[in-house]
Image (tube, rainbow, N blue to C red; front, side, top):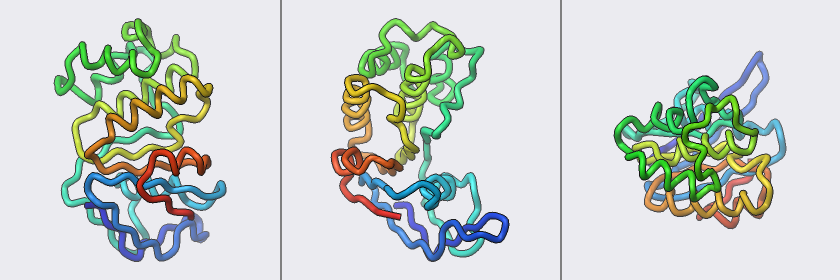
Length: 188
């Protein structure tokens, strides 16, 4: 379980998150929605340990966390498959990576350099990378942004399958997406 108790985070004297308490159950899917600037991404960064709270505490109970960032954060000089391997190591076979790419409409892209991929293709490589990572918790920050409806449906279905039995937190502006995927929706 991941737990936040009375967490406060501010930047330059401005409060972004105030007195946030939240318990994310093991093997549960939570979506966080809200207007821009409400602290959704900051909350994910706190959960991931990329930011430290100014006050309050966060317990992760040794949970390994993978994340899809708003930016794809791929290494442009590596192939799509090599970008996935950076996170997965030998935990996943080449066949599993190829199957995952096929599931999100990227068949045959494994050996293309990330710098050669379109924005939507990069987005799906970043998604595959986080979902194939070993570990129990996955944080998803607007993972389907920029995808056309057909591709988005593929990516959502793949995500739903890969997140079964894991702790997941989805940040999205799309409330319909949140309700379709998550067990619980929290509005910030």
